[in-house]
Length: 114
Length: 109
Image (cartoon, rainbow over all chains, first blue to last red; front, side, top):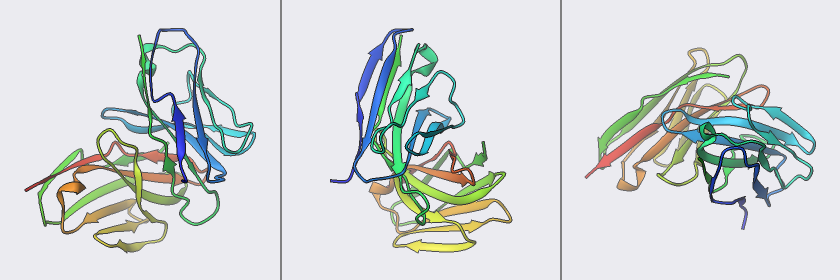
């Protein structure tokens, strides 16, 4: 089944404790992206990647890191989480340069930082 | 990023038609998307416009005017399952994707 998977789905952590949220897709998509979703603000892009070893900042990259060492994986790293990073996070992927290239979203990761 | 505006909430009756407007400002336009998101779930793709005009897909249609920075999503023959949030998103030439805050549509019996 074609899908985007994220782990963990739920995470409660404390300020300053490094964490990684994994994202993997099995559709051979070149483009991958991370978003956070907050009430009243909608989805905001954190980082995106157009292919292996190519990453770019979205609108809200501060406090986050990403890497794209393999085509299928795009982990999101919070080196020192803070309470303002409490949010719902979505990973998404799509083809690149093939028509609409609509994004397929993972199920989401709900992160709480205390 | 882009400036994307859409209404916060809309309510309509089952069987009716609802039109959700989206206005945007962007430095380099490379397509407009509409996504549907049910509460607690991931967004799913509804439609894509890159040229001016109307794209029809069953009960859903989407319109784009690039010169006016304007799009709308038209939902016809509303069903209870259409109660959801509808997200307008604009892709720029550098392949960034920016979303509006979403329009929550409530369908009443």
